[in-house]
Length: 444
Image (cartoon, rainbow, N blue to C red; front, side, top):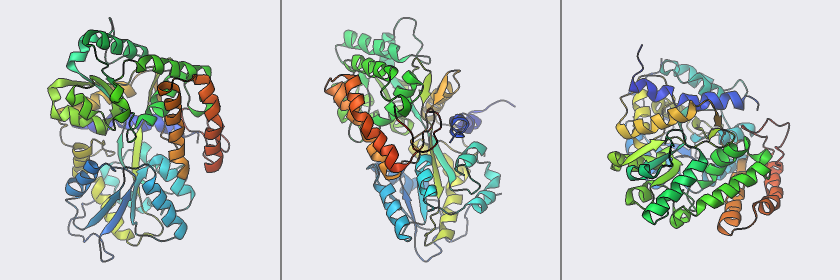
């Protein structure tokens, strides 16, 4: 059977979790239709660590949830850790307003370990006709028999360039098969030709810059992450970034997302989350090309982002939450989620044809995840309330090494105790691409 666009809409992104599951192992539904959501007499309160930016919250409330036959109060926050802290507080109290939780795989690992989540095996059985990807389902069990969460949506990080940047590609370079060193040369060529620093990264306070280190920089240069935090390959990565940063737009430390500077022409080549690049591709589709993240000495590293839906044990309206889960997993809702916030579906049911900007991202994801040297790096797992402290270690290293121009080896050695303290406090084991650990991960 020929592969259509709408089939590729779910098959290719599923590679993200197929890779993640393989490495992480070391560690006939009806639409709600006439049912009345919020059976406890009020709206179903959904609290989510995802879709926190204002425009994504608006899309969730006004478009994605608009077809639900009932009322949902959607609560999210773009500030890192706020929602997780609320969930932890409600879990410790054994009561709270949340009937449904939307969160990342790594966050559910913490919630599940604390005993906060209800087994959703019955919900999964009711959703059988939708064909939720089996690898997602296994991830949602967190290595046990109970279904801690139901897969909801997925994404990753790629690159986008303005067409005029392509003439400055290094000789012989293929935009779909770049190395990080070639990206440096590309930035240098643009700076020489245009007299401007035209590379861009979301290194502002609200940007996802820490994910570059965790899913792209460290794994691509070292083949690992936490266990090689101070190693010689890590120092080489930081030296590469210092060399590259002279070609990065100096406003990068203010950027929270890269669509705006790409559209404004402040940046010609940028890395970011698919959901934060899609605006540029939509607003001026003929002006841009999407392509995979480059490869490093250890491979083409990338970070699969898997979000799920779970019902806490203290949920005041678990039946209403089940109805919302069923609604969010329907093919039409999954397609709306893709269209509105650029998170890809997790089901195998037929979806509408992809619009051109989303197909461009889809093709970039396909090229990245299908490489022979593909190296997935999971989102942090099991850190609990130490998640933001963990991210801050990488931001501190960036500040001290790149912006303050200090010696990488000395800075990393100074930050290593902070990193280890986070693992000791959380008890989090190592996650892929680091080798599995017995007990808290030992940073090195």
